[in-house]
Image 1: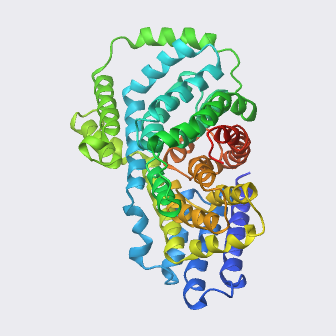
Image 2: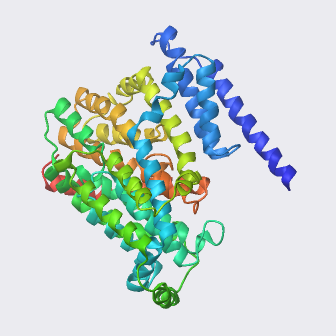
Length: 478
C-alpha cells in the first residue's frame, strides 16, 4: 500500500513537472507583446503559478513545499530576484492570517472556544442546519462592523466553529463528515456573502469604490453598496445552509443528544478558568479595536498581533505553543509565496495583457450581454489569484475600463463586479484569509473543496443574476 502511494505521488509530481516544462518552453507568448520582457518574465511566472495550482490539486507534496519549489525555480532561472521572491511575505494579510491561526490555537487550548460552542449547541442545536444558520447570522451581524473578513471569519468564527464540531465529536482525523465538514463549508461561504454585502465587509472593497469613481465617476459608497446587496445577500444567506446540506450532507442526524451532552459538559466545566477569562477579554478587545479602526487608525493585522501579544503577556499562551502551531507557519510559507507570484503577474504586465485582450471577446455584444460576459470572466479568473485583494487590485479597474469602452451599463457594471469581487472567492481554498483558515482545519479534502466551490459559484450566479438583477432594476440601476 505504501509503495502504491509513493508511486502515485511520483506520477503526480511528474505531471506537474511536465506541465511546467510545456508552459515554460512550448507555449509561445502572444506576438503582440514584447517577448524580451513579458515572455521571459510574466509568462514564466504564469507557467510556475499554474503548475503550483495544479500541484495543489494533484498533491505530490503539501502546499508549502509546492510553493517553495515554485519560488526556487523562479529565483534559480533569474525570473525573480531573491528580494522579489520574498516580497509576498511582507504583505500584511499574510501575517494577519498567521495571527488568526495563533489566536485560534489559544481559543482551543484555553477551552474558551469549547465553552462558547457548547453554549451554541445548547441554544441552537435542535438541528445541524440550525447550527449552520447560527454561523450565517453571526457573519451578517459582524459584517458591517468588522472591516476585515479575515479578522471576522478567521479570527473570530472559525475557532468557534472548530470547537463546535469537536463538541459534536467530529474531528478531521475521525468522523469529519459527522458535522465538521458541513459547518466548515457553511462558515467559509457565509463569510464571502457577508463580505460582499457591505463596503466594510472586506478590507479591499474600498478599492472597488475608488475604481468606480475613477472610471465611471460613480460614488458607490457604504449606503449604496449595502442597498444593492441587501436583497440578494439575504436570499443567499438564507439558502446557503440548505444548499450545503445537500452538497456535503452530514452524517449526524439527531442533534438533541448533542444538546443534552452540551449541557452536561457545561456543568462539568464549572466556573470559567483564568485562561478562558483572558481569552474572552482578548476577544472583546479585538472586536472593539477592529470595529473602531476609524478612531485609532491601527491596521487589522496590528490589532491581531496585539491580541497574540496579550495572550503571551498573560501567559495564557506559551512561546512553545506559538512556535508549535504548524498550521500557522505552513500557511505563512505557501500563502506568502502565492501572493508573490500573483503580484508578479501584475508587475510584469501579464494581467494587463489579459485584461486588455478581453475587449475583443465582448466587443460584438451589447448592453446586458456585455456585462454578464465580463462578469463571468472576472468571476472565474479568481482561479489564477491567491488573494481576493490581489484579484481586485489587478483586475477590477481594467474590467471597468473595458466595460466603459464597449458601452456596458455603468451602474450595473459597478454593482455586479463589486459583489462578485468577494463572491468569486468561493471557487478555491486559497482565495482569502478565512477560507485558508477554514480549509486549514482539515475537515474538507482539497479536491472536494474545489468541487463544492464550483457548485457554490453557480449558486451565487443564479441568485445575484436573477434576484439581484430584478432588485437593481427596481432601484433603477439599469
